[in-house]
Length: 208
Image 1 (tube, rainbow, N blue to C red):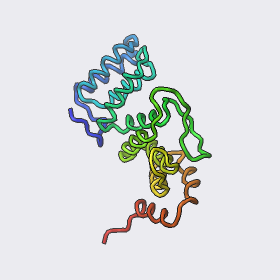
Image 2 (image 1 turned 180 degrees about the vertical axis):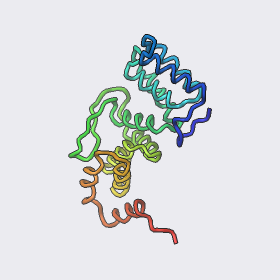
Image 3 (image 1 turned 90 degrees about the horizontal axis):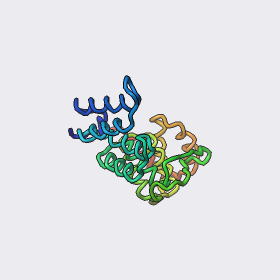
Image 4 (image 1 turned 120 degrees about the vertical axis):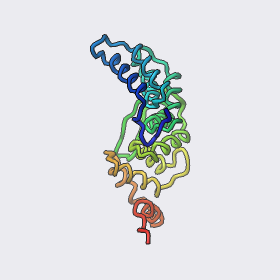
């Protein structure tokens, strides 16, 4: 089955059956919970072309929810899902490369996403920014917010307050709780030229 990023939950009948079995074993529905069997059926769903199953496997191996932890294997699954175009995996990879960890805390007073260090992958702001951008273009609100924060601070590339304002505005429109506070902080820093660039994206002139 060919994965369509615009319809990420679309799956074949075989993948649907595999996902159902995976959830049955994961949650212990009418059978004893069995993390190994759950992993097996998620792997089958991935083999059948269901890319979100790769993301589930990546998170499962990273967190140890399948009975054991294998961070390298988890990262490999997340990369496969991200490269196939699955926005949640792209955001998760961006977050991992930005932090070097898989946990986070937010500080809305500083209008950004700040994370504690961990050690899952080496911190790489440039790579993180690329994955955040890929996910943001697919409408992932957390990625929009994180990309805006990185653009405002010049992390992983040049600072661009106009585009930071654009992405934070789009994150706000998509319902991200922290975006309004970030916009209030960045708005006064915009030059007239920055404001004009942001408005050109957010409020395009009607076509004649």
